[in-house]
Length: 345
Image (cartoon, one colour):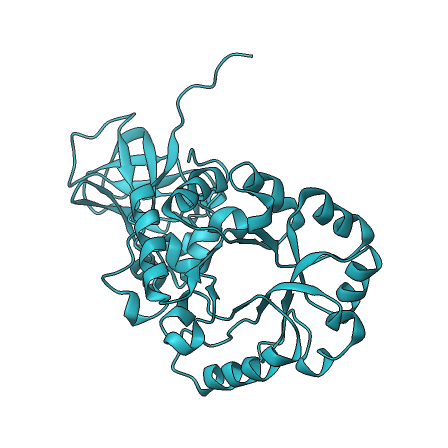
């Protein structure tokens, strides 16, 4: 088969910024060590692009959600450093954990019994302290199957760490009450935002995700966390609109004067949703406004400020996550994880 030609859209990953972010979060974690949530293909940025950078920066604990995410991570780090947050739901998943050496995160008494029925082994244990998602309840800690577990990391997850909420202190207190009731080697409570809550939330291991990839869930991260991902796309065509011409579906933009525009090889199939309407691309410091509706594979932009641009030139979509979240109404998490598979990373 012939080699593929060069791509017309790419996601530029700043590895130095990613490494900086992990080291900064590790430093903010104080005496604890920072791990890394690498689920959802490293929040959409690509395991192959991100995990080697995190590994080389010093990270030694990685968390995925699905069993299907394990192989890609194992291409870069040892199985003993990988935990699967959704845990085993059947004998096949438990057997896979043992065969590969990754640790299941036990989330229920059912999973504890299933894990022990297959012979047990090292695992992590999630305790629900108030978010009411995955995790055993504190009153289930005494179950014989839970007590029999070989727990490496005893963990819980904060519901409101991005806010100054009383819920945070209640969850911390509930987690502290659980700690002496089950044998374990390490404890973990704080996600990215939780790291900024202070040393009492750090335990032995923190589990940043969003902030690794450029997100800022709390004001404490401003000036610390650097942007990691930047979408870039090629101009497929340039054309001149005449006054009265309309652009795109439903003709939501009408030119009032003659206007040079470009068609960008990017759209909502790539995660650049219609909520980006009214935003802009950039060529260096020059703003190139988006015109009309975002299409599945194309976006039309105003080239008035850069009339010399032509087919084949690259333009950039500014992707500072805080600013983009304010413009689009999407969360910083969504802005990352919706990025599509067609990007060359």
